[in-house]
Image (cartoon, rainbow, N blue to C red; front, side, top):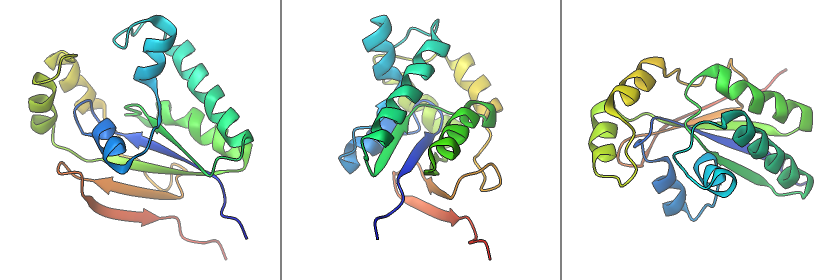
Length: 163
């Protein structure tokens, strides 16, 4: 019996280690930053959010249609409202959806951000941290893996089977 296809959504502040974690795992995720570069010629371009995420969800649909077992998404996905379209897409496509939550303190993210070539302004980082809503099983994820500042798994939570 083949395993159900799944979407795995990264969730975390800039500087939380999402892209680094994917790289260390040998995973090439669909990335909102990469799409900003491909479509708008600039990873920092924030003016086309609707188009970027429309393209991201389109590419997810293509990957699912191609039978890819797992499709990873690298974006901040900080609040439930931003994650909802992915949850709805997973339901529509009949695939599981999981979250990898990078639970990294703001001060660690700020320090990492300060050493990057592309820096998010500190006031923006603080506002993002204030808005952050950790993912929940009730939101619709079948599994949530929590990753700490060192890139290690802190915990895993799974949906309880129906029955």
